[in-house]
Length: 119
Image (cartoon, rainbow, N blue to C red):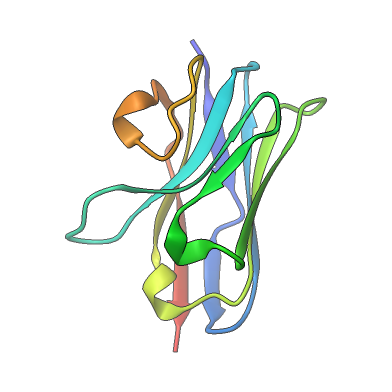
């Protein structure tokens, strides 16, 4: 069983930055960030494999960066140039197999961190 705890959410203005962190109780082969806005389905934001390969959703390319500190078992999401449409609950997820940006392929989930971007 892997436990994930997110931190770093908050309220910012459009154009500002935030960094989300996710601390894991153990190492896995794949981790990702997902988000869910009210009334919408959960969607993939970015994912990283243990070999360093990353993938991003088109709507965050060039603005968000996913990274991982293996020594600390911590996953990060650096979010720059935030937009009001980025407002959502952001979730960290992990699995033993590569799941890319598909939420259904991740077994372990954190409780979420709220990100709110005002215009």
